[in-house]
Image (cartoon, rainbow, N blue to C red; front, top):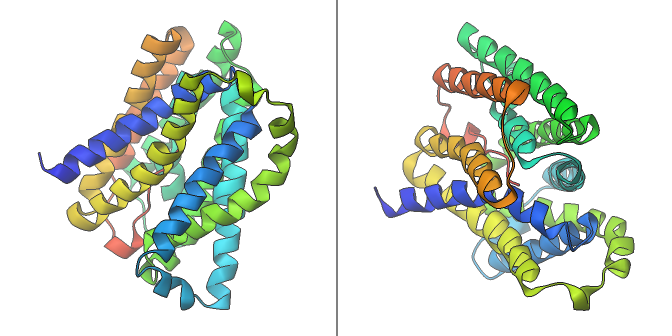
Length: 304
């Protein structure tokens, strides 16, 4: 296993663990205050990385039309996704959230096919159908068991839709600009829009009473789950290729489930277990039926 393989494995574990990290922090910090803080930290780090390196030359040559696309990406993929993700995770279980988000690759493939970016084999459609049936069972099972609410699960489904649009709409830009530039600028724009919605939570948060462990979690969720993990993932795409790199995205829901079971004491059983099995089967089928695209046309998975 090479160093970049280790980085990617660590990235998947970080993203999976981040579900429980967020769930833990929300016990002390209101959701919008927490998300605004971590987005602000990550955006500052990304912008510093862009402008302290030669990537600032990419920013100088961005056309007005491409700026318009980047703004849309920030509104949908950063602001929309993040506000729904935190609110949804506050209302549902880590297990439900991670399994629903695992359907993102299937949703991305469907939209890519719809806009003519790629053609999907029959096995891919079967995998997508299984994933969607599995999600419906998870939502119903979670509500029946009292561990989640349909509202929270629906918010996580909306997250999948936001990230799908963000991924497909951003594909053409990746052929002209570095992923760091597109990610950093869109995140900064999304953060600027998000912050006004978090001012009330910031004002009512007793920051002096927030424990050190919660502050450590905030740093983890910004510097590691956003900055480090994005960078490591794109290093993998460049050095190993997207097909080999994408294998590691399958570790994310597994890590999320294991951490939630150990840390939060969540359990997966009954209808939710059946739904999880169907989602896993669907994801495997869509992976099996996926034909790798050229580097500039590949999609990055959702980040939490």
